[in-house]
Image 1: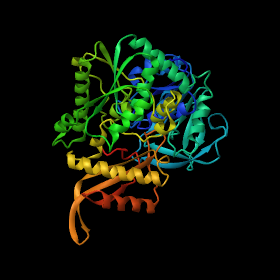
Image 2: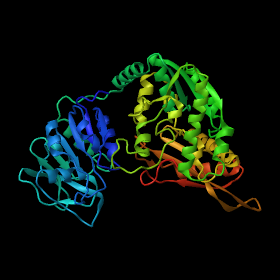
Image 3: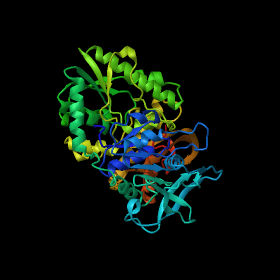
Length: 508
């Protein structure tokens, strides 16, 4: 979307930074994330948010901004955590380094229920994640909220500059969304974020960039790549959709993919490449190397396919915002890389194709909304995500055909069971992982030494944070019993209830 009157979020490295963007969009305004190096290139923002970060302002090489340039933008500014501390320093105050980290819930007590805290309860829970503390305040600064100990946790300088020590973007800050909204209401004519507008702009951008040239679209059959293919079709460009069967699909997945695309009126070509992928993955145990190999092989397959497509100039991928954020700091900022994604990182020069990623700035639920806007059926839009690397990242350790066969059967049982209990639509993602261990069991009168599988189900809104789904124990017991009895080679089932963070949703 156009960089005019948008909300510019400046990245100081917090793992929560991407959530700020997400929450602003939830409130109906367009937001974009920027690296510190891009601070002079924010365009014409309507508001600026300075994120939190893992560093201390007392460090010699602590991340910094040009305060004069910040003031030149002439728009409301909100500093969160590190951002607040930095603002306090810029306005002439001090920040005290501490060896004590405040991490977890605290009580927010606004001085007055107006301005930034209009409509906020006299006491509400907020989430803290910091070690440094403001101590000396500038003369033009006033405290507008404290915690339960009387410590300042929100500051205001003049009419346009605000700081909060807590993280309003996380759900653990119970009224954080309202605080963000109160801040945004102080800006003039912010750019709205509506999926129908985003769709229109995406179509215009695709047509302008691609023109009459040929696009090769990689499809997996998941929601993301399907929305991408339908979007490209609606754009009216020349497109060849290619489905690569890499041997890492779920049970009957290939047939289901072809049926779905047929129903949606999109022609796809299937490339059978399981021998190639599984051959290259043989003996590989490192998860990053697996993703690298899969990404490389995808490129090689598409390169070969593109040779038979006259004038193929672009390769389209269904890369999403969380993929980019986790693989690299999206904006090039100081945040930590969580894991690589097979489809992030560009294309090799030898391929002589340009990458097209129209969904690159969208979160998963926004892609679903775009799919609905494109007319995709609700039954499809509600499908659980399936990663591009497929079962490879649900098979820690070496990948073998035997392990994949076990995984497919166990996963099919799990999904079937949560559907039967009416839980599928309540759960955002559910799958089975096979662990690289064997355990002793007793089946009948004999000793067994067989595989362990982990069932995983999560609830989330944006896939940036997630909680383990609370599946009733009797359902879990039934799932375990069915898997052990129906899937040869498994004698133990465990349930992964880890949240994200500290875990990730997938196992690798």
